[in-house]
Every structure is written in structure tokens, then in C-alpha cells.
Image 1 (cartoon, one colour):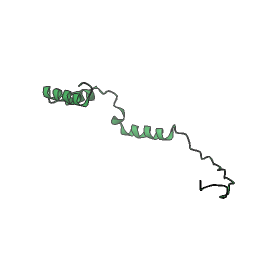
Image 2: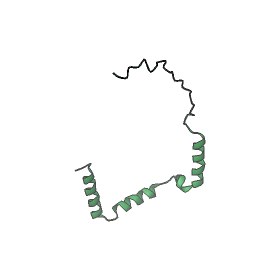
Image 3: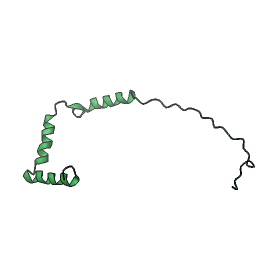
Image 4: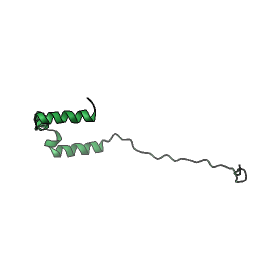
Length: 83
């Protein structure tokens, strides 16, 4: 059952049976390993970076191109709608 939803649930149950705080310990290890601080440590820096990204967008400007539609010179008499 490895790789299935049922197998994952079984593995999770086994981990919790061994140690009820299994997933809490894993999460704590990940939180302690962080060294950079990043935007969470400095919200003002995040605001400035977001503003820069908004100004220096990579999206191209949209230009509207006029489209001409050719009209047909057919009369309603030329069409055979009965067929």
C-alpha cells in the first residue's frame, strides 16, 4: 500500500502510536533550522520589495489592434436557405 492514501494514513497512525508528538517535533526542528529571517522578520522590507516588483513588472503592455471585418456583398436572394 505504499504510495497510496491508505498507506499514508497507516504510516501516520503508526508514527503517532510510537510518539504522540511526532509531527510537532518535526515541525519544531524545521523552525529552529531557519537562519535567514527573511520577510517574516522584517515586514517593512517585504512591503518595499513588493512595491519594486509591482513597478518592474515583466508583463507586456497590452496594445489594441483595430480589426477590419470584410462584409459580404451577397444578397439574401443569392442564398438558397430552403435546401
